[in-house]
Amino acid sequence: MSLPLWQTLPVRWVLLDRDGVINHDSSEYVRSADQWRPIDGSIEAMARLYAAGCKLAVVTNQSGIGRNYYGRSELFAMHRKMATLLARQGAQVEAVLFCPHLADADCDCRKPAAGMLHRVMNCFGFSADQAVLVGDAERDLAAAAEVDINGVRVGDAGDYPTLAEWVDRLLGITQ
Image (cartoon, rainbow, N blue to C red; front, side, top):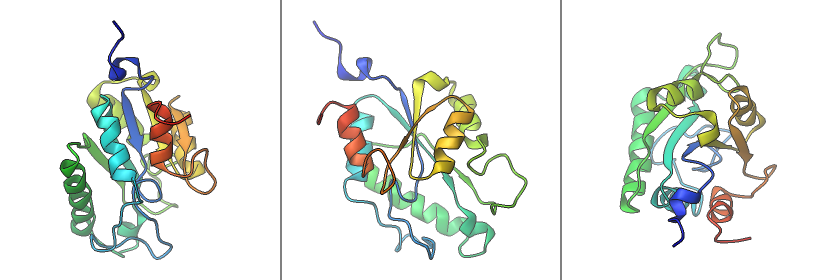
């Protein structure tokens, strides 16, 4: 008898950057739930991971807050929209961690620093070898490397064009 798929996956936790991985990014910043649009297939891909037994967490830089482009209430509305879409697919994220600081701030949370990764690992009690971080920028991979988490880059400069394509590969749906 073979093991269920979730018991054979190499990871138990998938940490996801938000803008450019889950939703479309914008040089003008995504400032409201109305502007927050998921990338085609990303919500369904997250649901496939969840159904396969992976826990999901979002770790995202949100300097738009520090720039006063939007506030925490708008950010939370975007995350509620994401959570609602995931719930419709039977999935959820365990946590959403965000850094509101500007790039020149002296903080440990803004990627490429690994503060958010340390926090989620400590809060949920998992180790680096049980996780992978999916991001769209070098800063995401640098944060992952700082805590010895494997990193996967998606997007135009990535290993995979989209989160959905990486998930399909991980789950053996495509070769």
